Image (cartoon, rainbow, N blue to C red):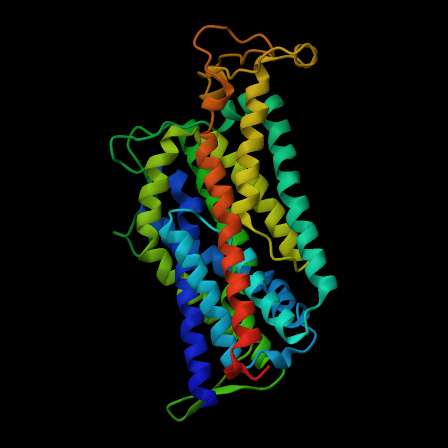
Length: 407
């Protein structure tokens, strides 16, 4: 029975990893695919590789936090509770995906595991408190860093990395397999500035994939790791006994993510690739760099961070910073209305000097609220909190009142 439950737990973990791959590939490589820089297949391959690199290098710190530190006694991670925790993680994330909102996998996973610890009286409140504090600090940090970049540095960054999008359906970078070894091939007529911008966009996608691996691998395998940690658990495959340890679980979880990258991620790449053309690529790059850096840093110290929440607040902060470019600080103190310059939303022409703060031309300047849809932003933030609450409350009620778990 124990081996059967272990297999079921691994299968559920694979399902969670599969959904993680589908959900995270779009945000990472949507800008590159939408700008016709690379193909969907190349995007999926890069995502799978860099997710695994993040999972195998920094990911173990987060796995250890969720699998060992968040509860005092890892004995509560029985095979049955394992399956239940992963069920609530996967089920809650499915509801978020169904609603079309990218929910936080980290918050959802921490909520389910914390509910198990609370129901059994084994919750490590100090560890949970540290995680929650960083959940508050990280988005605020992302907002202010993005705000400063948007107000003071955005036009100059635009001059460095801006590239043309929608090149008549032709990808800028493809893989030529005609020779002995595959090699990169650039589209006809691609100039040096476009190639530089293309590599920047792809590199940022790789950074996001790495960042996702550092934090999200724990969401799929941490409950199982809490069960098998230090127990020398093995799974019989035919006549061979395969040890189930952290490395094996990371490989299994990363493989599931890779499958999601090459299958269901194609839909999110379509959605985000098409929608991103309404947002300058420069803005997407800035948000990705800020969010990935924060999430990777937190993963390094073992904190499971939410890229979705940090990125959302970074977008809002970048929008606020760009909106205030039309007004000097003295004007803000005088109560002048903040408006958004069209020049701040698009790439400047090559060789054109960006206007100074407060000197943008007044014509064709939309209201600041046009930068992003407030109602959509509110719905996203709401669902980002509702999904973890569903996971946490559902898991707590189950472990507290359903006698089958024996707690």
